[in-house]
Image (cartoon, rainbow, N blue to C red; front, side, top):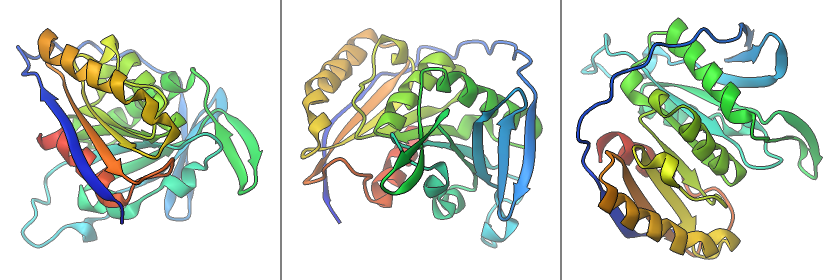
Length: 249
């Protein structure tokens, strides 16, 4: 396991919660059962799709509150990745959550087989899928998270910028993009390996953290260096740390 080093953490306290906007009616979404998973897609655009793990009551311990609504974790793969490889029952179980892995819009061939590629429209249909699930499942809206690796990290930031009201916050790992002014009211955790080519963005993340601390827009950012890690997904424990930090600080 690589060694993680927390190198920078800044918090800005919220001045007050903004009133929630009325939800717009989204496009029609279709659900199909595929073995242990649920396949969701936009009826008018089947390539806008994702696969989901639903919470299992057997995950609950005897002393757990069975009435507590599950959360929702949205996972966004990297360039050429496959969303089914991003389905993580353990992370879902540990957080009593639905777990939705969304696909990039275009299919691509890779040395590892069929993969998917993102475009900027991805943020729009990720938000459509999340709104649909919130409307059609018993989901704790205070525990809706989005995280992505590499290009999926870029899409995480795009999705947060597009629909910040839907999420408690977002986590990026090895992303070439960094948080910006659109995210000043969001909770964002940024993980980066110091052997990753994208480590060159580290100064931009530090600048963002400093700007956030001055602006006090209600957001927070944690920047975590993972010593010796290249451009690959961090160990699950780091992902868990980032998701828990967003929810708990």
